[in-house]
Image (cartoon, rainbow, N blue to C red; front, side):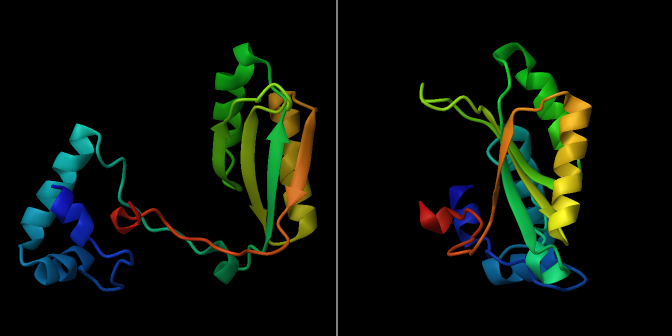
Length: 151
């Protein structure tokens, strides 16, 4: 199974049958590849196989990391609300490290600065959380998807 993951291309072919094309290059049938991926998903090794939108190429050029101060007993609810916004691509919890009071992090995307700010305000309104800090992206140095080739 690990060999199968190592042989998976980092970029899906843009074709009508991408699994068939990938399977052919791997020397297996399309059905074998799909079955193997289903088994990996069922076992929990693979969470999902999905297309990743290159948001900058679609006009979403404003990106803000927003850090939120959230009490421990409210993180589950707040994270679920934040994650429900389509403008949010990432929502996760981190330890405070005893020097930083912000525990929930979101990446908010928009086509304009104002769009991002409106989304952040909407998130604050829906969660009732008003202690947050916003860090807009200035420049992207690297952005890749995780690959078995990196391990």
